[in-house]
Length: 103
Image (cartoon, rainbow, N blue to C red; front, side):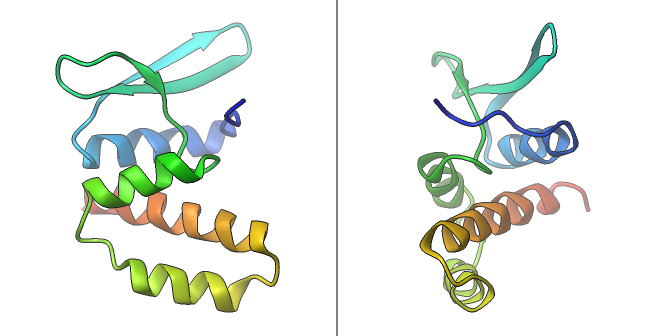
């Protein structure tokens, strides 16, 4: 199962999805709130690049202005474990994409 985002991360994930050109919707069922995205005419899917390597990679590909060499180098130096590096890289990609539309 793809991880649920923390409430404070939902705005970040939503902004990153919009920066990548996705149509974005926020869904809430009881205490669970998630972001879904779709490409034009496509099907809706859960979107959390902070928790899913594949979503972070797709986000990076859709936002080619992100410096992935920097992300990889920073993750390597910031974290000692593989999971820590992956978590750091996902966060850097998501924040980088989201930051571009908050200017």
